Length: 350
Image: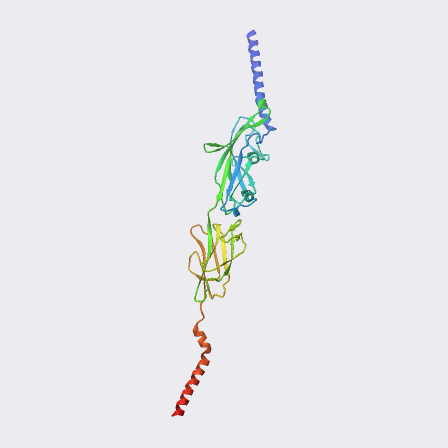
């Protein structure tokens, strides 16, 4: 009987301890229903760095916006009674779901006349709106979305960002235990994206004159309009620039060229000769193809060859035959009069 009482007491004690331990686990789990934690400046000083290098300063643009995508991948969860998923604006994120964030700056101004500019975005801003309600190790992928600026080659790099969430001491809430960045096997201090100048070409417009009445010092006036571009493009004429859809006037003499620099692929151009200086014939060749009798040339910038527009103007001396024909009636009468006089004179002498 005494032994039975001891066994019963031991069983009751074990049950009480088990209930106490179980109660602690449940209590810890239950905290996740009302608790969440987000990345703060106390958790990480890491930043996303964006560097933009353009072909020239005029192609940097203040306010240009770059978009980055933070994709939730997976979690290595601690066993709890709550699903281990982060939230964005209080909505659960499933694997593969992404949150976009943008970065804008005074790129052109900060470049101070150069062609490279940089700006940063903190990880705190990157994770803005994302919260964690469950302990675990959360994996994200950071990438850049390709934009539409034709002058930019967008970075295709990706980075893994890992956020570790744990309980505070005594289960008094959650805390961020660490935020790390990796690329492959390399651990990094942050993420860096570099945007370089996209492939580009120049457009060259040339002028030649020919013919017996041509003057190599004549100035011919042209207008060029280019679309499908973004920014301010320099030319080989000081102070003369090109912007999207704007008609730009220039002049050329024999042997001269007008060059527009750093044009992106598929930009469209129209060149018109507006003052031919009285030359009788105008021919134009696009990309060294056969001449066409026209004042206007059109084309698209290509990367696999030169982009040229060659104008040839011809001015000839009026035909002497034309002048003779104008006086021919008078000449005939004059010659007839002379002939008649000679005949008359001979008859008279005879």
